Amino acid sequence: MTVEALARGITERGARVLDATGDIDEVVEVCTTALRPHTLVPAGHAALETRLDRVALRDVSVNRLSYGASVTVAPAGPDEDNFLLVLPAAGRAEFRYGGVSADVAPGHGAVVGPHRDFEFAIDGSFDQVIVRLDRRRIETVAAAMSGVDGPVEFDLRSDPGVFAVVGLLTTPVALASTPVLSGRPTLVWQLEQVLIEALLLSQPSNVTAALFTSASASSWRLRRALDYLGDHLADPFSIAAVAAYCGMSVRSLQEAFRRELDVTPGQWLRARRLDQAHVVLRRAEPGSTTVTEVACAVGMFHLGDFAHHFTIRFGVLPSAVLAGTAQTR
Image 1 (cartoon, one colour):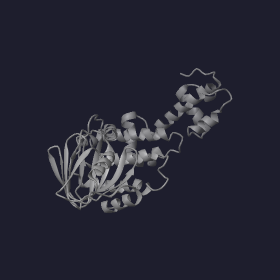
Image 2: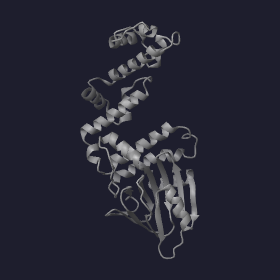
Image 3: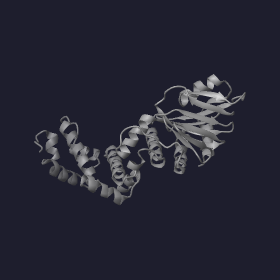
Image 4: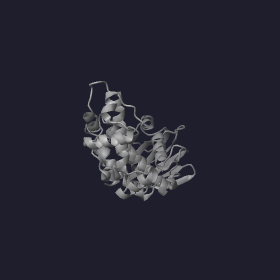
């Protein structure tokens, strides 16, 4: 999908926040809330016709903004809460962030951080998609992926690879006018997570080198695999599905487990399932459950294997733990 098509989708499915609005104070107030604090100065006596359409998720919003006149935008106060990914659909602008400038036009976007002053000189035909991303969420994801804590500083000029995120944005935009996302915070979080990870991997920043060292990249993907397996403890195990979720091959996933944990993915998952079963059996009230029910609840349906591995791990039969007569090692 092109940026132009994405912009049309935002207008068709998002919320109309400003509709050909000419009042400068109203435009500044609304755009400050939706994006970040700023001032707005039209060129000469140009009349504004500002349109703002918005798809809001949780820590991310996808916006389409055009002023309909040449304007200069500058900060109105400190703001350290968000990043703005700007994907131009039409027209031209010059962006300044700190001491760096960038010409912004279709095919040449920008990532504006929260740490320095900015100024945007925008022509009247400039039409843009602005993705607003929470700074804390960016930093949290970057630290998990790279092992590097602290502020993230993106280059101002967008890398060509950044435009691949347009495809990722189509899903939340397409679902904006449907009930699919309503009441599903986990799904919203996952959509945002993929978008943020893609931005970190495609746009140069101060954490790029750490992201692409083999050790940190492998460790991040391994952590992601462990989180996935932990969240799907009782689900049928597919190593191919886990590898695909983590963006790596099955062989690479197996090697990461062996190198860092000295076990296979299946062995790690079985140990976690057994640990969970042990906790449930030990805490169960008399007559409230059975060994079979507990084994199935943690995804172990072969009861002979369950009892065998449980006994090896804890030195006692699961039935003894349930009965409260066991002393596990």
